[in-house]
Image (cartoon, rainbow over all chains, first blue to last red; front, top):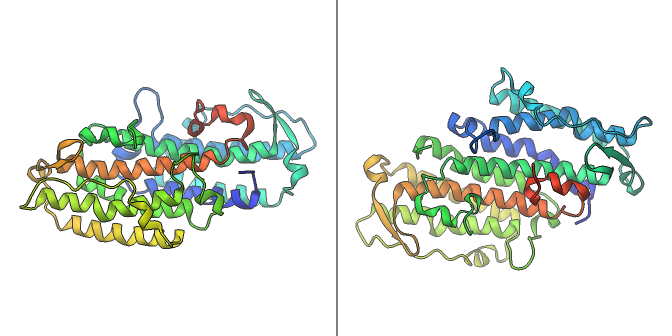
Length: 175
Length: 175
């Protein structure tokens, strides 16, 4: 499937709703448990998505479309710690929803066509990337974190399902 | 985390909304593409969830709680083909929503406590399982298919993201 802005936008638009439906109002064990060690909780994941809205996708689109340096500012994988400080899950979900809406409004003001999708920026690790890569990665980044959320939540029931682990793909099983 | 009906129910209640937000109204490429070979499309996955509502979770709960044979009817992993025949995605999403609501209404009429959660049934492959295992597996089964949906969708952009694959967990990358 080729990147097509008309087919990508609805996915980006839905992500805040998807994540709100997955998490809002659930018991704390679902929200503040991780997969062990320094892995992320659902709460961390929402904060990370907010940090991406603030510093990653649209700012980098603006670098590609702008007249200045083509180099992206490195993304801070620890940036979510400052975002989540003192906040409730409800506040984070609302913040993500508002930022995503604002960012998609900005995206809609940008001329997206085959010429602009081929324009490039310089990623600090990946090197030269196109606007097409960046916008596709925004979609897949949302899906990566929905994937991660479902896995982190399932992990909390790893013992509870007993022998069923072997049929549960999300727990490494076969179905 | 121990199985607790009060903490599990909201997850089961939300799944139809989560999946509707993920899929409803998206372009056909998102809905009818799979991961290659005879893997499932998002459309197949919704049909499979409907088949589970009809033949798996509540019927098996009733076997455990009933007076008759404790043996579960084997689940048909091909049952979704008949479910999806001639249907649109919108119809399947509505059907899943209605069946889940009805099934949770049935579940709420059943006395769930430590004694009943320890009651058992006989799974055709897994052997003796408790009601606690079954109800936990229902939750994790939902999460398994949300996990799968996000992965099947991301797969369609595997080429489009270019060098970003290596940072995308859902495509086998490192983040």
